[in-house]
Length: 482
Length: 101
Image 1: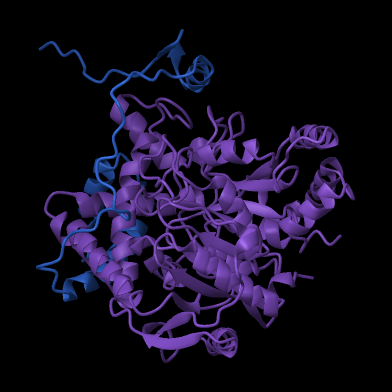
Image 2: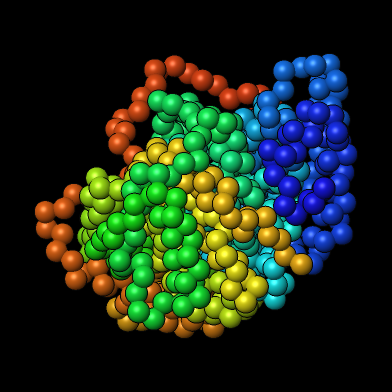
């Protein structure tokens, strides 16, 4: 059993057939983690109750209890998703040692499905970053080349799947933070439509953009996780009552007649040649199977990054206002209350968090609010309009997930703007609140490249259909490092 | 938009962030270059465009006005996280000072 590529579906079959017990399975993963996590730093902690939880599932299975397909299978959770009793740091010093007082809704839904909560995955501080280098707990290394970044901010989650530490992970995606590390680590990642998955218990970064989503080896696995975690939650007013839920077994992997748009703005002169060739090769597979490729235009593409880097810091400056050393977390006392706030936050937050808080505070301040924040909200509408327009003619939009493969640790760290540019393809989907999927589609100099698919709001089914088709005729998702 | 040291100090004050003098210049330059980059949005005419603050279509998701209390275990865990406490009460520094002149 090759831990680095085995899928949830395969494991579920083995568990049901009693070829392996959940306890044995979890032990295998824990052993691998104990041997290899130090060199990768994907996980911050593993749970001391994972084995007993696994044993409990085995007992229930022996009693012929009605167990779902994910029961007894371990998952790792990005460290901004709360598990009661576990530390929840969001990769930050300001929450170091903080123990979550309640379970996130996704945590509860996974537990009810019998999933084994295995551990906490490293991430950029407060999910702010594209390389997992801003984590207070050290960078995560890309399992394909440990001198390179795994991407971010869900770098720990992506690296954990790639390194075979777990067959499934949850990450979060605000500007690409599931899809980009999935692409750089050669795994599958899905950002659901905004509102599809409850954000209750997610340490907030940008509330109009954040979504929790799965990272796995296959699209089918991702769909299985979505079945468990998605849907209306009373505790999250922005979560939507779904009119239907996808049943992975019923998804047809036939793309004949599917109309797929290729945005001309995504394939420009000067783009990385290897990425272009490999992504185009992947796109042609759909055409060969009967899909219709259509050139489309998303005219406001070049403004998406700027729009995001105003709206997101504004929301961040508001959401991170709660970290003040008063009710929880890191606290650094000074002579008076305001100084306590300043010192706690000055010492507790890393540079990227402080940068974004300040950008946001500035853009929302008197005299600049209209010019920056309100302007960005209007451009956001224009970006959404672009997608609405294109989706009148096509079912899917396709392109690269990232402009390059994984870069070396430290290479972009001191130049924020260069770092931000790695998100150019992923950011628009968050602004327009549409679902987006990244699947592995090739290697360049031994480093993974991701293919991104986007669909209309709540049309995850079409993403599953196209993604599962692609993974039925290629085997990039079965490649593993070393 | 090239910010000055004073701009950064003002923003840091608004955001309740202590920034050291050495870091001041770094943040000033980095934030200035990001602000310069986002200036590109000014190229677009958005006179007749509505603001999109929020992704989905919902408006005013309500629930009935009933008291839903917190589970006692959760309440206790929250209290246990207070950095400074007296009994079950959160202890804070004075918000207002008593000044006698």
